[in-house]
Length: 440
Image 1 (cartoon, rainbow, N blue to C red):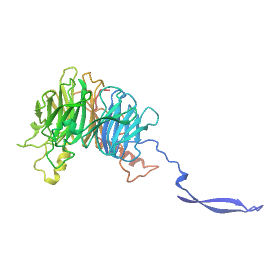
Image 2: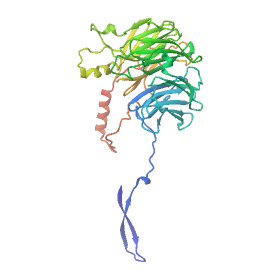
Image 3: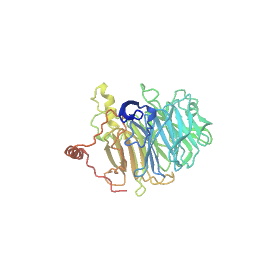
Image 4: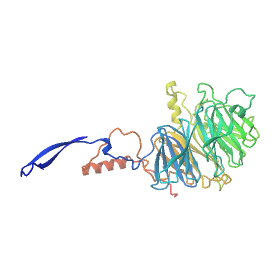
């Protein structure tokens, strides 16, 4: 930026005043720009995490931004050293710490207990790509389990933030007698009734997308360091969910089905169900994948509470070039099964992730979910599970503004009053009128 400044001055004792031009060039060193606050919904979100004790929510994005939301007007933004996609976020519950697993195979430990959160430690996986992380169910656990695309599971010591010598190789997990590779580690979970048993979910739909997807679930004894049971699935696996009593677990699949398994019967599932068969009119229907399932229960009545995303019928008459559009449309739906009642919620955008909110973080308590937080591509909604018809909670944050790249910006100092009033009136007509939940 260049400008001309005229300065008056006198020559000697002369009473005449002359003027000279001084050319002033502004450089970037003359400015001190700093970020004060970031408003709006994160751009291109990828994952969601929740701390049930601190009641803090974290959203990760494709460009390395972490957005943290607390109570009313409590929010902050964190930036990774590089613009890298965040694969998963995991809170260390009630410890003021957050773990981020990134696409560049780095795992970062963030310290949130100070005014400006910073990365306290980092660890890089050199030879394998990170696919899934699990923080064990016990509070104050110092171990982080990390699954990879190769199919191995590693253990990270969070105190020293180094790899432990304990690791689970995929061939030891499925048994040396099986030669076929089980695929990617898509999920890790522990039996809530016996945390010494780790259940590792494998699937081939990510490693071999052009073949018929198959899945396996392995029960691994963490103390004995042995594989106790292998459950062979006829379809690709997307997620695992436990019943809180620890006697059965549920699998969500790439073909839109849900299967339930008993612990001692690994030859076949107890049931295989396509929840949306009743609304499909085709004779041989096809369904979109169920991307995630959560199995919970209502404390007062004991009814099962199953929440999952996707799994909707696909249009068989779609042209081959539009199959991705059909699969995408299935991801707009969240299904809530409570007892025998089924409710299908159609979202404005595709579902990226969701978290079920329960009053207690302890695994021995009945879950009794109160809400479900749904992360969409361009929005974040919180659904009240205690009220009829599942209304939304009103947002306390500026989610109507988005952090997408800016293409134009203008500033009007004195807008026309009539124009401004008409603009406000038009905005009020376009705004969707919703009835929000009365719950606090």
